[in-house]
Amino acid sequence: MGGDWLRPLGCAARTPAGAAWRLAEQRWRRFIEPADRVLAGERGPADDVQVLKEGPNRLVFRLAAGGESVVVKAFPMGSLKQRLLRYRRYGPAECRNLLAAAALGLPVARVLGFGLRRRWGLVRSSMVMLEDLAPRQPIVALLRQSAGNAARQRALLDAAGGVLLALYHAGCHNIDFNAGSVLLDESLGDARMIDFQYARFLRAPSPAVLLAQMGRFALSCRQRAPNLPVDEWAEALIARAGLGEPQRQLAAFRHWAGREHSRRKRLKVR
Image 1: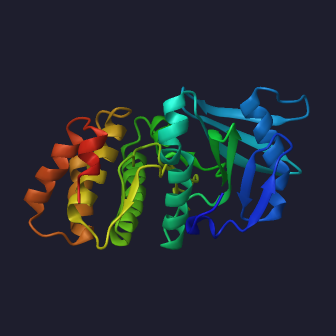
Image 2 (image 1 turned 180 degrees about the horizontal axis):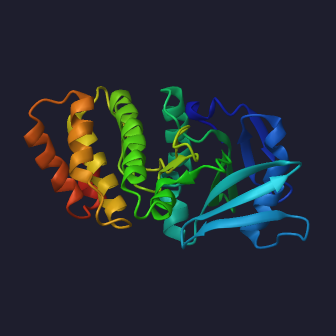
């Protein structure tokens, strides 16, 4: 397992089951064997595991040991096509993009390790070990808790706006930025971002990218809180970003906020 993008993860390790890992520090080594057992469905009675999200192509779980905890985002490769052609799209893309975002000073979850499980030379799963961001909560959860509190909901939007501006100034286009992608503490500070599998890094800030990200975020928020004043929020954020022609920019925002757009279309925005 190599590549310049793995340089920040300088500690090599391997589990008895054969998973190869690169870790930010050796202290995280105690989590790699429990991670193996979770993916193999063979967890032991002493393994402290909490499944956070489960789907056909990913499994997210929290591991606790020795008074510390981490979150592992795993991408099982269930088909031969995935193992032959698509294994670079999942864990490697997530890990590489998070490391690149951290290098730019963006507020992302810290990458603690990256692992691959192989069999007969083919990648069976990839794993990204991340810092546990608890007790921060995703904005989507905080919106639900703030139902009926317009001031609190606007404060949530403004907190996300600060993160969007950071992405904009860094030239980062995270096409999956949504209400679940930003985690905040109770004071709505100390924001951290997750889910960077489909991020792109541009040579310069792009107003078109900012408006697309704003629109997708607003759409995801409105699905949970239909009466959010997203137009007012967008106008204020356009002004904070210093974009000219505010009415034209607001129209572009509404285009992206009006309905779900395909991943292919979002990737084309520059």
